[in-house]
Length: 169
Image (cartoon, rainbow, N blue to C red):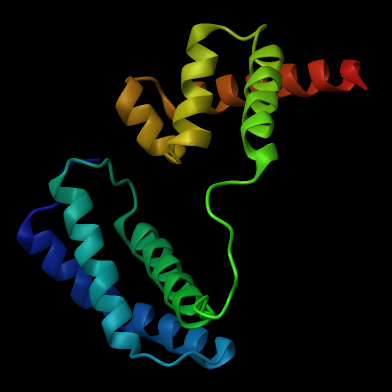
């Protein structure tokens, strides 16, 4: 779980490049994507190196490289399948719908009610996870807590909120 040296990274990238390229090619073929598998692999390896430089704890570099490659494949797939429609011909009224303001107030009221039994720590962890979109590893790094502790705290908070919501019905 230390930062990789350039030599270690060079060895790893030479060792796993073929496996990652085969994975990306297989994904592209199955998903019907355009794109070069080599570009995906290169992007994944750059990301792995950047994580290492930032001090991200890497236990199994090969497994992380595979995970990053899969993520990059899915990202490319999604980018290629986004449909854009022109809004030039649409008649759109200005401003926002009249209910948008009341909807926002309702959501805040419900959120405050459901989270009222949570500790400040649980609220903060939920905010980092749901509102900031951080992964469990990123939350653990940010808070200095072990990943398992973060996972348990978030799970407990969600259970408490679900029980409170069930009582509302």
